Amino acid sequence: MMSKPEILQVGFYPEWDQVPLDAAFTMHRYFEAADKPAFLAEVGAQITGIATRGELGANRAMIEACPNLKIISVYGVGYDSVDLAACRERGIRVTNTPDVLTEDVADLGVAMMLAQSRGMIGASAWVRDGSWAAKGLYPLQHRVWGRRAGVLGLGRIGLAVAKRLEGFGMQISYSARAAKPEASNWAFVPDPVALAQASDFLFVTLAASAETRHIVNGAVIAALGPAGMLINISRAANIDEEALLRALESGGLGAAALDVFEGEPALNPRFVALDNVLLQPHHGSGTYETRKAMGSLLRENLLAHFAGQPLPTAVL
Ligand code: 8YV
Image (cartoon, rainbow, N blue to C red; front, side, top):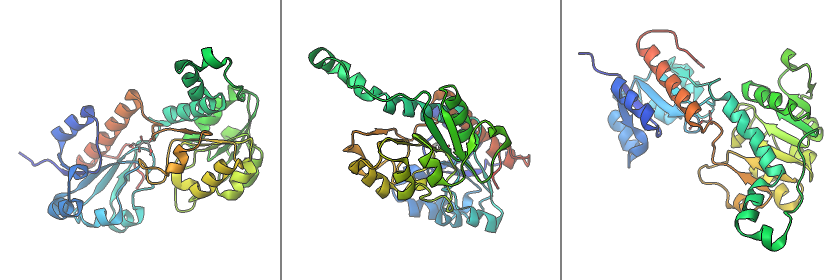
């Protein structure tokens, strides 16, 4: 009987993924190892595949600890935490899980905008803690419909966000490498500062890379301004968090709704102290339906590779 391929499992997967993974592969649970460097030294030579998560990736040290590595399968659309240069040097395949999560991430981004603009988290507390009865009407908030939305990055998720915003009658502008034919109804504004100036709500939806690091800088944040809201459903690295915190603390930016943070799940405690920020735990794709689809695609890519078949969703 052929031995099962040896896979380095970087992070947790739910049981409905873990059971079929254990059936098809010998899974080495890196995330459970107390001494991770020692664990890699022990199992690295046996590893021919890595199963990771979008936010965890696979760095060069991990890749180099696995001299027989052939494929990295990412549970997530973002592969910015995978060292692609190290993979290219050795011809290591890389796959991700696009499309299956697009709509959920877009849903959450729009929900975050609505929840923060209409003060829904505070309003729920207002009812629950008796303030409604004791203090009367909840303070007025701000509408969303008909206002200006900017989408920074019109890939799969940005396009899904913009289509949702059309339903709110919003004036939509977007930034991308080039104008997109499918976006002819919206204004193409390539410069991020100009896009922020044209927006009340600015969605950050572009894939993270070395080129996009801190693309949302102090100038973009200032252009969005005291009445503006920044919504980030991409990666924290796309935003200069220090500039963002200063603007939120000083009133230079009206509000933010964030699903990702530098150092997550730990985040800068200054965010927690602010009442003009909606905080979400990197949950854009966090539904049963979507995570099950992501897990299936993660496995399909690994199974296809070891069967010598074309990879369903290859990045490299
Ligand atoms: C994933 C994400 O759910 O797709 C990505 O890149 O960041 C999320 O949608 C997360 O990485 C899974 O752990």
